[in-house]
Every structure is written in structure tokens, then in C-alpha cells.
Picture 1: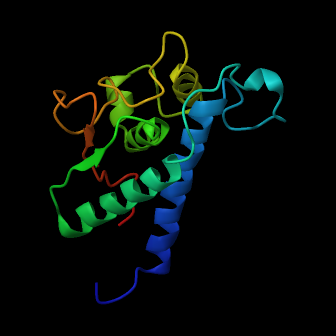
Picture 2: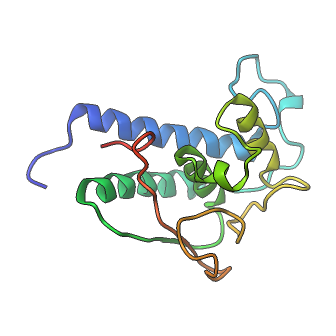
Length: 161
């Protein structure tokens, strides 16, 4: 790169990263009040917390920057992650870009859909706390359960340019 990223692009990258982080935390902790419109009370929090926050911000950071360079340089790229603790991040990013809602049509991209997204993560009848075969991605569904391939889609509506 010959020049730094513009302030507008940096703002949009940061906004995407923060949104993915919020969606990730929400999946781990929240059952209700997903936009925090009311004061948080214990009944809004999942009774059993599964999923790990530790790796998630880093994976979200990588995801947003990969999307930026995919779009900027028109690249074909695959993001390879391990199976474990970053599950909320990959779910959050696929939800932000719209892929998740294509696969889980009942998880719409509105407040009601966010509530469903949060509730189904690591919850009976929902999806696992670790990335699993049913987590949508833009790669082969035959990927090993030990490693997931995730190709960011760089959709113009959600990805910084």
C-alpha cells in the first residue's frame, strides 16, 4: 500500500468490527433485550454460558480486513479457522453479510432475527458453541469438522470499501 486508509474507510472497518463483536457477545450471553433498549436484568441472560469471547475479537478483526482486501484487489481467498472458541465470531460475520439468514431463513436481519440468532447459539435446539458443519460459509460443505474454511463474501452492503 502506498498510502494509508482513508478516515472514512477506517471508520467503516471499525463499525463492522464493533458490530461483529456485539453480535458475538450477544450470542454468548443474551436471551432477550438484544438491542439493550431496557436495563439489563438477569432474565435477559442465558442461564448457562457456553462459547468463548477470547479469540472472537481477533477473528472478527481478521474477517473484516480480509473482506476489505478481497474487495479492494478482487481476490479469491479462503479464511481457514480452527473449530473452537471463535464460533460466535464466524456466526456474527456470516449474519452481518447475509449468508447466515440465507441458510437459517427464520433468523432475519432485524431485532426479531437477532433475538433468534442469540437464543439459538449454544442453546438446546440451536447451534453448537463451536463452529460446526451447519455454520454457513462460502466454501465446500465437505470441510473437515476439525477445520472450517470460511471465504468472506465481501458483499457491498456490509463490507467497507
